[in-house]
Amino acid sequence: MVVTVEDVKKLAKLSKISMNEEELNQLTEDMQKIISFAHEINDACDGEFEFTDINNIINVFRDDIVEESFDRKEILSGVNGGEDGFFAVKKLI
Amino acid sequence: MKYELVAGLETHVELSTKSKIFCSCTTEFGGQPNTHCCPICIGLPGTLPKLNRSVVDYAIKAGLITNCTINNVSKMDRKNYVYPDLSKAYQISQFDLPICKNGYIELSTGKKVRINRIHIEEDAGKLTHRRGDTLIDYNRAGVPLIEIVTEPDIRSAEEAKEYVEKLQLIMRYIGISDCKMQEGSMRCDINISVRPKGEDKFGVRTEIKNMNSITFMAKAMQYEFERQVDLLESGEEVVQETRRYDDKTNTTESMRGKEDADDYRYFREPDLITINILDSEIEKIREELPERPDEKLSRYVNELGIPEKDAQIIVKYKKISEYFEKAIDGVSSAKTISNFIIGQAFRILENESEKEKFNIKVSPENMRELALLLEDGKIRSGLAKSTLEKMLDTGKSCKEFISEEDMGSIDENTIKTLCKEAVDANSNAVKDYLNGKEKAIKALVGFVMKSTKGKADAIVVENLIKEIIR
Ligand SMILES: [Zn+2]
Image (cartoon, rainbow over all chains, first blue to last red; front, side):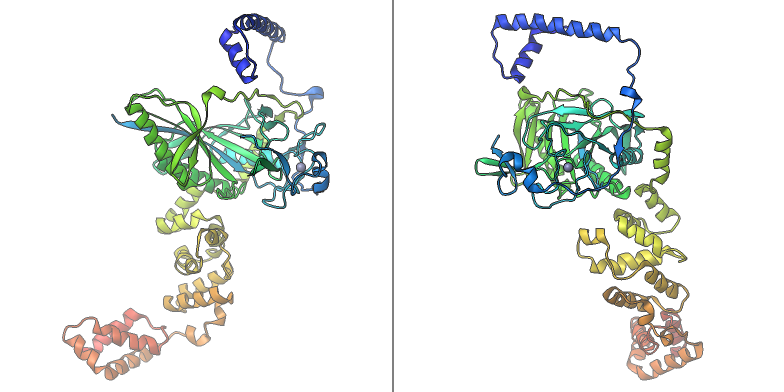
């Protein structure tokens, strides 16, 4: 995969970072090196990806049983008790 | 130029498991804010999710009933985005290995709307905006959802409407969701584009999010179709963006453009392990699936002889079809029961939600008892109907309203005598009839029916009277 200046521009935009031409070029080069390294590692593990986990554990489920929820006081204890039973944040949009 | 609409639907269906997807909190709707919560569903650091087995089973059911293939290997992924309805700043969803893929739903025209995938994920919390603040209730956070994604196969608002209605019906039939759009347990996002008729390439699409009514969805699609056609006709371009439908103005407006296109940085959820679904488990669930609504409809029509229109009404409501099947057991004509339900029982059910609940006072056994009296010729249909109305009012059995005397059959001689009496007592009606006024005979028949309390056969009576007059 080739990293283009456009890719880096998009990443910069998503990360809300402004960059000049020189920085863009430098970063494109750096990103290309990182991606190439990742490819090298990918090539090293040959064969199909095994979809089992450590110690071959699969399918750890819980049964559909309701247990009592936490007291609201405890739930809101990390936000100074909240506001009328709600978590409250400054309006975003 | 003629344009055609191209649409695909993403439908979120809230699963009716008892507990949430990754913790044991209740999924019950409503409740005081933040009282159905625990450290897992409010996303406190250090907590670990544990997948609810029923969520996987329900998704498999949804996949099988919509003709999907079930992936033997499936996994959960993190979808990252920052918004206060999501306390962890990521939603646990599925990216490249959903539980179900490649299914379809067949419309009444025989057209198949292909389903690309069905995956499981957690719902987010509910936000309310007050003055400068956003208030958050996490009761809904972690309620299990399936998302059903179609291919862009839909070509009209009518097709979209039928698709959603069918989906709603079959999800209710297999009992995995109540699919109440007004309560938010079923919500649709529509992807929509237009292209000149005959063109193969797709146009630029817009997305309308969170439609919570089928009527509004159809209106929004129609509006968006016309808006996009107008743009193209006037030489402008459609911008790929997310739009919101406003039901007050019946228009759509831009929410955000492609410039800020989401980049969810999906990656595997490291706190949950692989889901392996064995073929034997899939087969077991397949065997337990109930009859599909369209199969039921054709059985009612072809095997039970129910008129199609009536059969459609019964199949439309799961509770009614369950009641119907109990009541027809041992009855030789199922149509008697469907007539009772649609003719009498429906009169006391005022709206859709009452029809859905079908909470009537008459048990299927009592309705069957009445139907058998009718079939055995012990009572006539007029008496059956009025009795059923009384039963629906009181919840009592038909025996409470029909006496032995009502059920006794009347011998032919008594009927003949009564017919003679009718002719003697209504000389005017007889004259009218003889003067060519055909309808006058009805008064005479009515006289006999009244004195037999409706037990005589009106056609037999009419013929007897005609004989006497001649
Ligand atoms: Zn919880």
